[in-house]
Length: 202
Image (tube, rainbow, N blue to C red; front, side, top):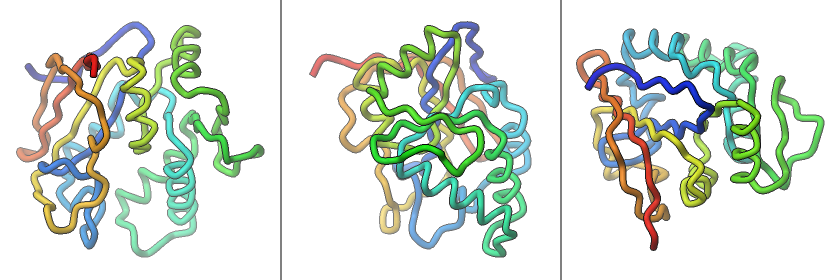
Protein backbone atom coordinates (compact mmCIF):
# COMPACT_ATOMS: atom_id res chain seq x y z
CA UNK A 1 0.00 0.00 0.00
CA UNK A 2 1.21 3.51 -0.69
CA UNK A 3 0.24 7.02 0.24
CA UNK A 4 -1.27 8.47 3.38
CA UNK A 5 -4.62 7.25 4.65
CA UNK A 6 -7.24 9.98 4.83
CA UNK A 7 -10.21 9.89 7.14
CA UNK A 8 -13.32 12.01 6.89
CA UNK A 9 -14.47 11.61 10.49
CA UNK A 10 -12.70 13.39 13.38
CA UNK A 11 -9.74 11.41 14.65
CA UNK A 12 -6.84 11.31 17.06
CA UNK A 13 -3.60 10.52 15.24
CA UNK A 14 -0.65 9.37 17.34
CA UNK A 15 2.27 10.74 15.32
CA UNK A 16 5.70 9.22 16.03
CA UNK A 17 9.19 9.50 14.59
CA UNK A 18 11.46 6.67 15.66
CA UNK A 19 14.81 5.02 15.15
CA UNK A 20 14.68 1.45 13.89
CA UNK A 21 15.13 0.20 17.45
CA UNK A 22 12.30 2.28 18.83
CA UNK A 23 13.86 5.40 20.36
CA UNK A 24 12.46 8.92 20.07
CA UNK A 25 15.88 10.59 20.20
CA UNK A 26 19.54 9.85 20.79
CA UNK A 27 22.25 11.69 22.69
CA UNK A 28 24.83 13.27 20.42
CA UNK A 29 22.72 12.96 17.26
CA UNK A 30 21.16 15.93 15.42
CA UNK A 31 17.44 16.40 14.93
CA UNK A 32 15.85 13.69 12.77
CA UNK A 33 19.12 11.81 13.39
CA UNK A 34 20.50 13.80 10.46
CA UNK A 35 18.66 11.54 8.02
CA UNK A 36 15.78 13.77 6.90
CA UNK A 37 15.56 14.46 3.18
CA UNK A 38 13.87 16.97 0.83
CA UNK A 39 10.96 14.68 -0.05
CA UNK A 40 10.12 14.10 3.62
CA UNK A 41 10.46 17.79 4.48
CA UNK A 42 8.13 18.76 1.61
CA UNK A 43 5.60 16.18 2.83
CA UNK A 44 5.79 17.64 6.37
CA UNK A 45 4.84 21.03 4.99
CA UNK A 46 1.90 19.75 2.91
CA UNK A 47 0.51 16.72 4.73
CA UNK A 48 -3.31 16.81 5.05
CA UNK A 49 -3.02 16.40 8.83
CA UNK A 50 -1.50 19.89 9.14
CA UNK A 51 -5.05 21.06 9.80
CA UNK A 52 -5.32 18.78 12.86
CA UNK A 53 -4.93 20.42 16.27
CA UNK A 54 -1.62 19.56 17.92
CA UNK A 55 -2.02 17.71 21.22
CA UNK A 56 0.74 17.56 23.83
CA UNK A 57 1.55 17.24 27.52
CA UNK A 58 3.34 19.58 29.90
CA UNK A 59 6.94 18.58 29.19
CA UNK A 60 6.55 18.70 25.42
CA UNK A 61 4.82 22.06 25.69
CA UNK A 62 7.67 23.51 27.74
CA UNK A 63 10.38 22.06 25.48
CA UNK A 64 8.76 22.90 22.15
CA UNK A 65 7.61 26.39 23.10
CA UNK A 66 11.17 27.11 24.26
CA UNK A 67 12.63 25.74 21.03
CA UNK A 68 10.16 27.78 18.99
CA UNK A 69 11.26 30.91 20.84
CA UNK A 70 14.92 30.02 20.22
CA UNK A 71 14.19 29.58 16.51
CA UNK A 72 12.55 33.01 16.38
CA UNK A 73 15.62 34.42 18.12
CA UNK A 74 17.91 32.93 15.46
CA UNK A 75 19.53 30.09 17.44
CA UNK A 76 22.69 29.25 15.50
CA UNK A 77 22.57 25.62 16.62
CA UNK A 78 19.53 24.84 14.46
CA UNK A 79 19.44 23.99 10.80
CA UNK A 80 17.35 26.24 8.58
CA UNK A 81 14.80 23.44 8.10
CA UNK A 82 14.48 22.85 11.87
CA UNK A 83 14.05 26.57 12.54
CA UNK A 84 11.35 26.95 9.87
CA UNK A 85 9.43 23.97 11.23
CA UNK A 86 9.57 25.30 14.79
CA UNK A 87 8.53 28.84 13.86
CA UNK A 88 5.59 27.44 11.87
CA UNK A 89 4.31 25.80 15.08
CA UNK A 90 3.57 29.27 16.48
CA UNK A 91 0.58 29.60 14.14
CA UNK A 92 -0.67 26.03 14.62
CA UNK A 93 -3.76 25.36 16.70
CA UNK A 94 -2.49 23.58 19.83
CA UNK A 95 -3.90 21.86 22.92
CA UNK A 96 -1.87 21.10 26.05
CA UNK A 97 -3.18 18.70 28.68
CA UNK A 98 -1.68 19.75 32.01
CA UNK A 99 -2.55 20.03 35.68
CA UNK A 100 0.52 22.16 36.45
CA UNK A 101 0.46 24.88 33.78
CA UNK A 102 -1.61 28.02 34.30
CA UNK A 103 -3.13 30.56 31.96
CA UNK A 104 -2.22 32.75 30.24
CA UNK A 105 0.06 30.47 28.22
CA UNK A 106 3.02 32.07 26.48
CA UNK A 107 2.85 30.03 23.26
CA UNK A 108 0.29 31.56 20.87
CA UNK A 109 -2.81 29.62 19.79
CA UNK A 110 -2.60 27.11 22.65
CA UNK A 111 -5.63 25.90 24.65
CA UNK A 112 -5.06 24.56 28.17
CA UNK A 113 -7.03 21.43 29.14
CA UNK A 114 -6.96 20.57 32.84
CA UNK A 115 -9.52 17.75 32.99
CA UNK A 116 -9.04 14.10 32.02
CA UNK A 117 -7.13 13.94 28.73
CA UNK A 118 -9.04 10.98 27.25
CA UNK A 119 -12.38 12.59 28.09
CA UNK A 120 -11.21 15.88 26.59
CA UNK A 121 -10.11 14.14 23.38
CA UNK A 122 -13.44 12.32 23.12
CA UNK A 123 -15.27 15.63 23.61
CA UNK A 124 -13.20 17.43 20.96
CA UNK A 125 -13.71 14.63 18.45
CA UNK A 126 -17.45 14.71 19.15
CA UNK A 127 -17.31 18.44 18.38
CA UNK A 128 -15.79 17.65 14.97
CA UNK A 129 -12.15 18.39 15.81
CA UNK A 130 -9.28 16.16 14.65
CA UNK A 131 -6.06 16.05 16.65
CA UNK A 132 -2.54 14.67 16.32
CA UNK A 133 0.00 14.21 19.05
CA UNK A 134 3.31 16.04 19.29
CA UNK A 135 5.83 14.03 21.32
CA UNK A 136 4.30 13.51 24.78
CA UNK A 137 4.93 9.79 25.21
CA UNK A 138 3.28 9.59 28.66
CA UNK A 139 0.16 11.25 27.31
CA UNK A 140 0.17 8.95 24.26
CA UNK A 141 0.44 5.94 26.54
CA UNK A 142 -2.64 6.94 28.52
CA UNK A 143 -4.65 7.82 25.40
CA UNK A 144 -3.80 4.50 23.76
CA UNK A 145 -4.84 2.63 26.91
CA UNK A 146 -8.12 4.57 26.93
CA UNK A 147 -8.83 3.47 23.34
CA UNK A 148 -9.20 6.97 21.89
CA UNK A 149 -6.29 6.76 19.40
CA UNK A 150 -7.72 6.17 15.91
CA UNK A 151 -4.51 6.01 13.90
CA UNK A 152 -0.87 5.31 14.74
CA UNK A 153 1.65 6.74 12.28
CA UNK A 154 5.34 5.86 12.49
CA UNK A 155 8.12 7.39 10.43
CA UNK A 156 11.06 5.05 10.88
CA UNK A 157 14.53 6.54 10.42
CA UNK A 158 17.31 4.19 9.25
CA UNK A 159 19.48 4.31 12.37
CA UNK A 160 20.06 2.01 15.34
CA UNK A 161 20.82 3.91 18.55
CA UNK A 162 21.28 1.06 21.02
CA UNK A 163 24.08 2.87 22.87
CA UNK A 164 22.81 6.46 22.68
CA UNK A 165 19.02 6.14 22.37
CA UNK A 166 16.78 8.08 24.74
CA UNK A 167 13.04 7.68 25.39
CA UNK A 168 12.02 4.18 24.31
CA UNK A 169 8.74 5.01 22.64
CA UNK A 170 6.55 2.07 23.60
CA UNK A 171 7.96 1.49 27.09
CA UNK A 172 5.02 0.97 29.44
CA UNK A 173 2.40 0.57 26.70
CA UNK A 174 -0.09 -2.24 26.97
CA UNK A 175 -0.53 -4.85 24.25
CA UNK A 176 -2.03 -3.41 21.06
CA UNK A 177 -3.09 -5.17 17.85
CA UNK A 178 -2.34 -3.20 14.68
CA UNK A 179 -4.13 -3.24 11.34
CA UNK A 180 -2.05 -1.87 8.46
CA UNK A 181 -3.60 1.13 6.70
CA UNK A 182 -0.82 2.42 4.45
CA UNK A 183 2.93 2.72 3.92
CA UNK A 184 5.23 5.06 2.04
CA UNK A 185 8.96 5.52 1.39
CA UNK A 186 10.58 8.96 1.57
CA UNK A 187 13.94 9.85 0.03
CA UNK A 188 14.70 6.18 -0.55
CA UNK A 189 15.36 5.62 3.16
CA UNK A 190 12.56 6.77 5.50
CA UNK A 191 9.66 4.35 5.93
CA UNK A 192 6.25 5.67 6.99
CA UNK A 193 3.68 3.10 8.16
CA UNK A 194 0.16 3.76 9.41
CA UNK A 195 -1.97 1.45 11.53
CA UNK A 196 -5.38 1.33 13.15
CA UNK A 197 -4.66 0.30 16.78
CA UNK A 198 -6.82 -1.93 18.96
CA UNK A 199 -5.75 -2.09 22.64
CA UNK A 200 -6.02 -5.66 23.94
CA UNK A 201 -7.29 -6.79 27.35
CA UNK A 202 -4.35 -7.13 29.73
